[in-house]
Amino acid sequence: MIYHVTIGEQEFEVELAPEGARIDGQPIEVDLAHVQGTSVRNLLLDRASHRIVAERGGNDTWDVHLRGRRFQAQVLDERTRAIRELTGAGAGPTGPEPVRAPMPGLVVKIEVEVGDVVEAGQGVAIVEAMKMENELKATAAARVRAIPVEPGAAVEKDQILVDLEPLEEDAPSDDGGTDG
Image (cartoon, rainbow, N blue to C red; front, side, top):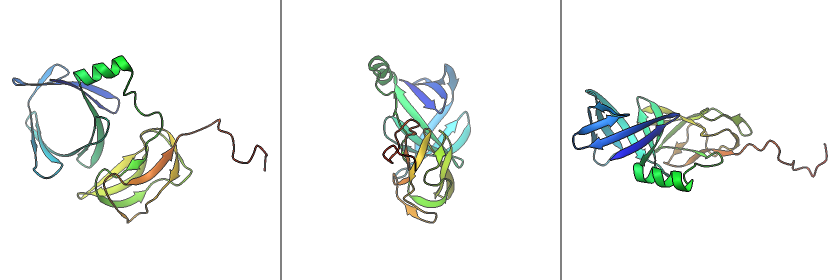
């Protein structure tokens, strides 16, 4: 089975077969074991051991935590990718998505304020979960609409930490068109 994996700007072709695995055509030694009842996985990659936390998100994405860093990976099998390319589906959201807690944790810091303009990839909040601090980032350029949590708050998985709205540079003002 061939999968197309996208992490940030990088895309990889991952082939999993009974005789082994290949990444972009190169053979690689890999083994993945799931720790029962948790989202923790033990990954052996070319004889190097890694402990990762991987949770399935929506729209064929995975939230992956490795060594205190958070990555979002989109994983598509060949058939799904081909269908999306033919239909134009899966082009992704047109606007910014709210920044959500990837797992239950504690808000350590909010790095933005309501009204701030953020860039794609900019850190907006830090959450401690499983004894690791995770910086959560905006997925698109946006304006901060609301921050429904405060530092020190306990949060649940998928709880909105920072709500974002699209940037509307040419939007009409709310003052009825008068200067004031």
